[in-house]
Amino acid sequence: MTSSDPSGHDAAPANAPDSPGLRRSPLHDRHVALGAKFAEFGGWEMPLQYTGVIDEHTAVRTAVGVFDVSHLGKALVSGPGAAEFVNACLTNDLGRIGPGKAQYTLCCEESGGVVDDLIAYYYADDRVFLVPNAANTGAVVALLAAAAPAGVTVADQHTEYAVLAVQGPQSSALLSSLGLPADHDYMGFVEAEHEGVPVIVCRTGYTGEHGYELLPLAAYAEPLWDALLGAGAALGVRPAGLGARDTLRTEMGYPLHGQDLSREISPVQARSGWAVGWNKPAFWGREALLAEKAGGPRRRLTGLESLDRGIPRPGMAVLDADGAAIGTVTSGTFSPTRKVGIGLALLDTASGASAGDEVTIDVRGRRSRVRVTEPPFVPSHVR
Image (cartoon, rainbow, N blue to C red; front, side, top):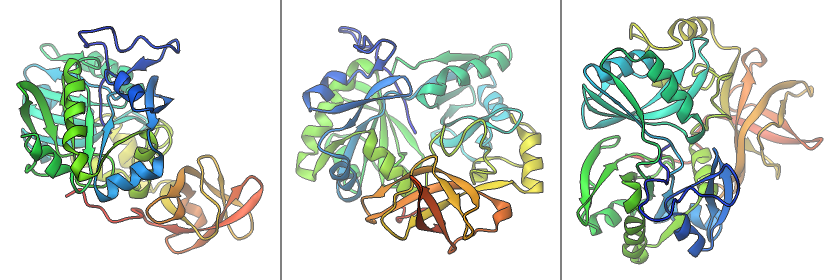
């Protein structure tokens, strides 16, 4: 997950869409020039693919890909005690990290449902920068603003920055060739400059590969995009769209909010309890999540791997040997790396289905064999 928007552009507003209501990235014209195919995502018109999902996916796994993920939100929480306030609201424990580090965390309802999953950039005790998902930015900002104590400000900065994800085994070489820092630890971030323009460089990503997310001001996104593609030509760089981002994250078993996490799917059910500071005295949804953890969830997210030609797709029923429904596929795709169908599914814990078991999915009325497994489906190289 990551962030940004358009209208901080000095030229014509980048968010003046042809499709009413859809926003555009400050890099929209660059995507058009590259022949991108577009799709609506979280209220934004974003590039789905350029040369093809498999080609772009493979470039990220073997060389380097550059994604425009400027649709994701951004918000700044500032003022005395800002970090303490954020820590009392979101699930993960900022006490586990320090300034200069980023952390995956969740914004939950008191019922335990997930309003959003996001990244928190811990600058200082009085400054925390948040990167929520595009469609949920307004909800996250509103909840935090309503709860903020006197002196703490929550500012929506969705349109002030772009976000470029540089992902793959050659990502470090690409950044170094542009004079950008590349040797900081995983989930660390550095304030740097490219040609005199500030850019935040964070060792994060959503692909499972060694990678970075760059946050320049929206008005300077185009020169940075051009520099990355130009310098990366010798390294096998490819511009990559949201299609490849989805296949890459599914291979890693990373959840997508609205499918694998939601207001109806808690962190306990989604196996995201590692992003919860269980020993913290306060965070939104704490009591409900502690109770669910203690009692055990009624369903749990797990992986599926196809044993025949069927491809798991969201919404498909998962069936036991007797044909009884025991769960639902939440994410699914054909794995370009493994060359098999893979997916994530919420399975009823009462079914007893566990890793190694064979079950089936309902593919338009036909039963297709799958094996229950534990993600990731490919090795992680994030560190």
